[in-house]
Length: 196
Length: 196
DNA sequence: TTCTATCTTCCTACTAGTTGGTAGTTTCGA
DNA sequence: TCGAAACTACCAACTAGTAGGAAGATAGAA
Image: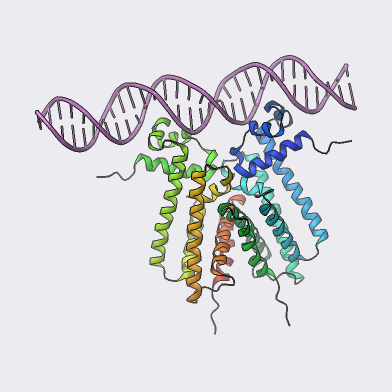
């Protein structure tokens, strides 16, 4: 019977939290060791190098995202509702300060100075989110659930930029409500007008 | 007769470049010393601590921004043209990789782990840009140069988030053209439709 | 004009603490 | 008894920052 929480999961979880608050160069193995409650050297047993650790974290972050998206697509048929659910996910994370920033947003801003292996994984994450949103946009447009003013992939990039820009603004002002303030009109713009 | 380029200006310039690429914890006094061509200790003469250095950098970054905005407002009367000029400024910076990212975007994402003195200065920068954009939105709306669908301050936050989100996307994909791809429809949306 | 005192800027040399990472050993459950 | 997972004890390189001195410019008084 496998444990519910393994040490390596604990290491990844604390890495994620540290990464969200200060970026790749903003935390050390010593920080993780204090939080998890094991010695620095023991972390190296699970993740030989810092690059290994963060690369694995980002890889799982993308995989978890892909799994969540799959569930979302299955549960929610309407394209607009999917976009709303995606926005609400981040709104909730920011509001309850559980995960008030995206790991990959953090890393993307540091991209030029990141080890290439990590940088590649980060780029992959953005490509995944972007192509998923583009598919949602296209389907929603065809089925009349979304009203687009540009090509689906352009609308996807716009929506993604709005979400990540709003995330940054919420952090910059220290006001969680800024996120919803920006996302609400963005979603309204994509809502089809009901003829009457 | 004052020199055109002082050492302290050189230090600030190289700090800006290093900061843009790797954030607050992504550079050291040793890095600056190599670029500027003086010893580490000499940097401490100009900026006693790293906090002093970055606080001063961000302060001047905001002051330079305020000066540029003043010139822009004077030269360009039309509100839509001002927004276009602002977007073009960043598009150009990203395209020629001269300053492919905003110092304060970088620092804002690291905000929770930043020294408070620096964090305060960063928040001030965003408040300045935000209130300036809000004033442009309001004036443009009243004079029929902009077509708003939300309150001016909401449109301002939306526009700011779009610009900074697009900046992040361009960096994440390593494709400068993504910025313009996102900004173009965003500006179109604000363009009044000419009645005919 | 020249001597002198002061100021600025840079230097060498150093410190204490932290960084990511290694070597070798112990503990412990299957 | 074997392997995984933890440990102690290191290490070299790097971190921001300090102490104290040397070189040059400047300015006032002789």
